[in-house]
Image (cartoon, rainbow, N blue to C red):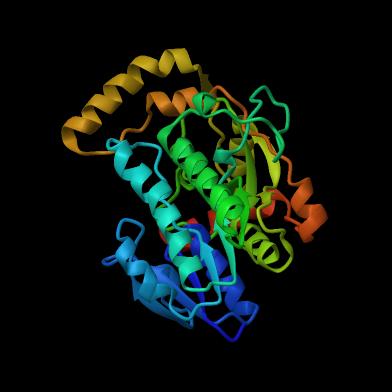
Amino acid sequence: MTKPTLVTGATGFVGSAVARTLIARGHRLRLLVRAGSDRRNVADLDATLVEGDLARPETFAAALDGCGALFHVAADYRLWVPDPERMMQANVEGTRRLMLAAQAAGVERIVYCSSVAALGLVGDGTVADETTPVHEDKIVGIYKKSKYRAERAVLALVRDQGLPAVIVNPSTPIGPRDIKPTPTGAMIRDAAAGRMPAFVETGLNLVHVDDVAEGHALAFERGRIGERYILGGEDFSLKALFGLVSEVAGVKAPRIQLSQTMLWPVAIVSEALARGFGTEPRVTREMLAMSKKKMFFASDKAKRELGYAPRPARAAVEDAVAWFRANGMI
């Protein structure tokens, strides 16, 4: 593209992968970065950095000025949220204001990174897709609710104001450059280090972060305005995932399987201590509630319409473990 492409969230895990994919495709990038943010993931990128964030809508106009495209990847992603309103403001209102600013700036095409958290979920092992019914009162967790509301806001702007947006819904990305790390990345890191003695069984859909990034680019090039595309990979039980991680890392897999009921009192105490000391709890009631449902998803629509072709999940686990090791996190 001759006009710059703005990417939000590029210092993060998924955003940095999206930025690298777009550069490889010839995009001239402008990256919206928060003041004081960890910029290791973009230090080697040929891109222009502009300061701003979702909590400061007044920074959007300057960042978007002259841009032809927007990839909105930034989000407040945490499973422990002492202040839910702050997350809602960033993920929902921040997204809505950014979309309006992009439209006012004349941006020609937008890819909004939502999440499978915003979609319907069967939960019993049945695979869900973009058509699975979703009801907000059934969604567990503030993060998931915020992504659901943000996606609704984007779809409303597409419908009512002609916003030129395509939506992608990544499942659970893993792989290199997970510097924070994400909650799933932290599990893989700990399991690969032999620090995961026990677990609560659940199910999730794993995908390589670079395949998610490729899916963003394909959505930009081939996606239909107002449509949603799941960017997933393979469904795994948590037990099977830890077995794969232990095989790749050469350590023993965790063997003690705990129930949600057993850990409920632990979660209550853990949350209380976290609030008192300003730390992050190892387990919360929301985590346990979410684990009761298997988060299995199908990416058939993205494969069919976009040409999306994710690699086997084993490759994602191998790359994640190798990156954690290379960066001294294991």
